Length: 212
Image (cartoon, rainbow, N blue to C red; front, side):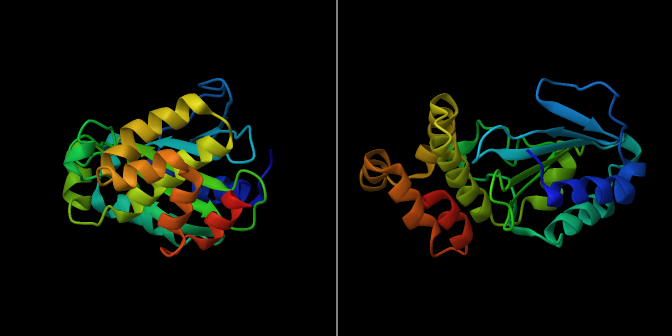
């Protein structure tokens, strides 16, 4: 798959922030990935897959002002919508990596409105450290993370990836649901449940893409 937004992002991000990052090796780090200067890009394989973009911060640049620059860059990047920093705060999710007490990286989710295939964007900056993440993001709302948990589970369901769908549902979705009523609604018709939860929260374009 190809994406003009992703290609432009890769080129621009490498130029803008490369000095802060470890260069990627010339060889691919993992199957299905592509190393491009300072970024490792995991290519989508299905219509509802995402583009995973990973990079690694050098220790000497582990500073709030640099993390904020990268965050602002992604949140203001043309073509991306519904950006959210993926950090969980609920005690029901205390065991997941993205919980505020465990997270040591900056992860940002987004949607590319002009892409018809694989329009999902998942960026992770590793090497930030738990202390800096907690000091920077302990006061932000995790509402966006909750909705992106729902969206990620829904994507896996649409891609017929049952193993990952069950894993995300078990670890991220079900622990956040009110007992009985919400859980029953989710288990009965997950697509309808996700649509109703997200349609009034500013995710209309993503809901339309996933529900069509």
